[in-house]
Image (cartoon, rainbow, N blue to C red):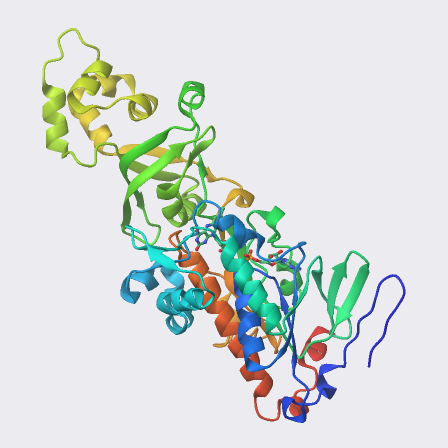
Length: 448
Ligand SMILES: Cc1cc2nc3c(=O)[nH]c(=O)nc-3n(C[C@H](O)[C@H](O)[C@H](O)COP(=O)(O)OP(=O)(O)OC[C@H]3O[C@@H](n4cnc5c(N)ncnc54)[C@H](O)[C@@H]3O)c2cc1C
């Protein structure tokens, strides 16, 4: 059954409950919505199984955020062993573990090599494509997908389901309705919305009784109330090396050595991103977060105290700091910014501030600026194969699921791994015994 309508095209495929099974020669139709790494991986798995796969994406081309991720040096996964790798997913490690174990860093690297792209392990253990870029990988991958029969429909924005359970997709010519035997949603989070992932899918799933945790900025910058002096003189300056500590809302303290950048609004950069979950959660519970900086991580408190206790004669404390501790520039400015005049003049109190400078972190920067987002489709809403319990036949993958991870290749690894699992899950679901006869049009049933 096919229909076409002038203006807004209705491309109505055969309703799924009357589709012949694959054994009768007709492949199952699967719609994958979202052409980021998670959706493309699901499409690949399904095409390999023999499904007829259509990939829809709202943007004019596939993988825009993936390409951006490759711009500063694509860190695609990490070489550390699984016992170290899995805890990077924090309180979602249990949920993600089965997927990441099945499609782990080693398998991911092999998959990249099969695309003709070499990888190497950096000194930090991070894994990169040899050329550091995403574009050659994406080009080779899209070519392989097309060769495998995957059809791409760009500029097709998913709008939910119509009354018949068909997928509503808006394209430049109007709206089409597409029936599919199974659907994989891989719509991304809500950062860098101009690259396609705008989180507009959240109400579409909530309307269908799917639990979605609010999308929040992750791996993001934070705002502090800097003085005009600090903002004007030091915005853009890197602060390094430091050890940052933040109390975890669940108890304990997160410590990390690294560097960050002072911005006009606050702080950003690798070290801050790594602590973003703890900072964000502290702010949510306390109203603000305390981030302690050890400005001289290679010096003990005793040594700092001893150096500051040296007589400084007529020298100012600032030049004393510079000559005895080599503390100058932005680090010295941060001390002046936070430490009271009295404490600054007191060597013992100043030494303690140098080793644990308390910054009051007010709020995360807007989600659109973040590297990734936390929150998303709750794992309770999904079965073990990443199928939505409320919408049989609809699978979810990638950053749209409720997990977060620091940078270091963990984000892409989980996107690939869940895309892989959703693709396999959809295929297995389609092939489950008696599916065709016993479950007439699960989406239609659910979506009316
Ligand atoms: C600046 C930057 C650097 C990064 N660097 C790294 C890195 O080095 N390593 C790493 O591991 N991760 C990195 N990431 C994160 C990584 O890119 C993402 O986690 C990953 O792309 C998410 O994959 P995804 O397939 O789940 O979603 P996305 O890549 O966001 O893809 C989702 C797709 O769905 C489409 N879509 C959304 N809504 C609709 C709709 N309603 N209808 C149709 N299509 C829709 C979008 O257009 C998009 O193409 C970086 C991110 C950024 C922003």
